[in-house]
Length: 306
Image (cartoon, rainbow, N blue to C red; front, top):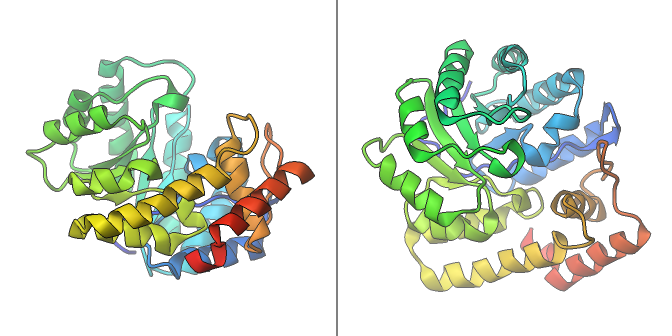
C-alpha cells in the first residue's frame, strides 16, 4: 500500500464510467485510469462528487474501488470517498478500501441533517477512530449545507488519523483563514477542488489540487501545479488561460446544476475514453448539447492538451 505522507500535486477526482445505473464501463474505466496516470498525477480520488458517489449502489462502489486499486497497483496513492449519512456504511466502505489497497479515505459531513460545529467535531472524531486508513476531511458546503469552520478543522486535526482537507468551497477568504489557523501544523495537507483557483492557492501554500478537469487533461493541471510551486508567473498565466478555456467550453453547456459533470463525462466520451452514461437523477447530454461539447473540444485543440 502506498502512503499519503507528504502527498502533494494533482489528485484527480475520477468520474465513474457507467454502462447503466448499476454497471461499470469496465473498459472505459481502465482506459480512464491509464489516461490520467500518464499525465503524471500524484494520486487518484475515487468516489468523490465528480464520481457521483451518492447515486451509486454500495455494491458498485465496492467494485469500483477494487478495480481501481488493482489496476493502479501502488503506482500512486488511491484515496476513497466514504461520505455517507450512516457512519456504519462509511466504516464498511473504508474497511473494504483498506483491504483493496487504498492509501486513505475522504469524508465530507453527512449531507441530510444540517450539523452544528460541535457536532461535526464529535462526528469526525468518532469517524476517524473507526477508520482503518488516514482520513482527509472534505469541505463541500454546496452539498452538505455546512462549512467546516477553520477552528473546527483545527480541533478535529488533533486526532492523528486526520491528515488533511480538501476544500471545494471556492472561497479564497475561507481558504486563507484555514491556512492561517493551521499554520502550526505544517504536515496537515490542504488541497483545493475548484481548478480555476488551484494555482493561486498553491502559490499561497496549498499542497495541490483535486481538479475534475484532470480527468480530461491531466498533464495540463500537473504543469500548472508545478508552475505554481516554482512561482513561474508567466507560465502560470499561460496555463491558467487554458484551464479557464476548458472551464468555459466544457462546464457551462446547458442550464443545469449538473452542467459541470455532464460536460466532463460527455467530453471524455467524445475523446473516446469512456461512456458518458450518468446515474439517476441525471441524464447524459442529448445531440444538440453533445455537439456543443464537440465544438468546445475542437476550440480547445484538445489533442494538443494531452
